[in-house]
Length: 173
Image (cartoon, rainbow, N blue to C red; front, side):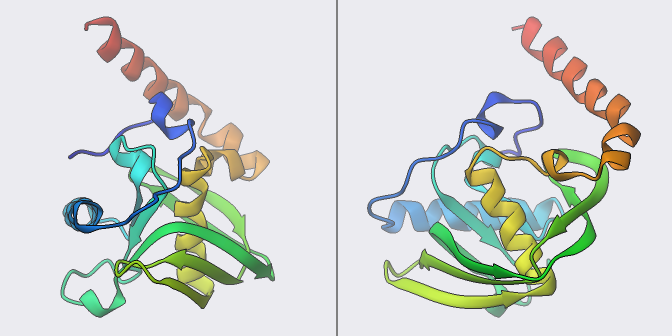
């Protein structure tokens, strides 16, 4: 399992729901968490590892030792959102690229947990930001789509570098 880099089409495809999050999906989620920690991330969505299914994993601390902070969410849905704040974000599919993104500061999420049961919970501030970022991936939305106009201009050459690198890698195949 490896991180898919922009502009790989899987990042724009969107996802399908997972009917039965059984042991095989639990193993996929565990592998995703391991990769997230290995790459110093705080969240990872299935499209970022080439899987077009509605699964995301996260740990807002980014610390493997704080496993109690881990979340594995199948088929997550935002039930409500309140407040707005700009904040800097990065993304494992865009190495070394950061920009300001506006997100809701308080959200309510419904999802299926690792045990197959439906859960609903509230999240605020950084945790809410991470969840919204990863949920965007499930819809084929990447964080540069939400950059401020100034950041879109600032990162234009870096985005072009990602696109050229992708074309060179895939032209060679």
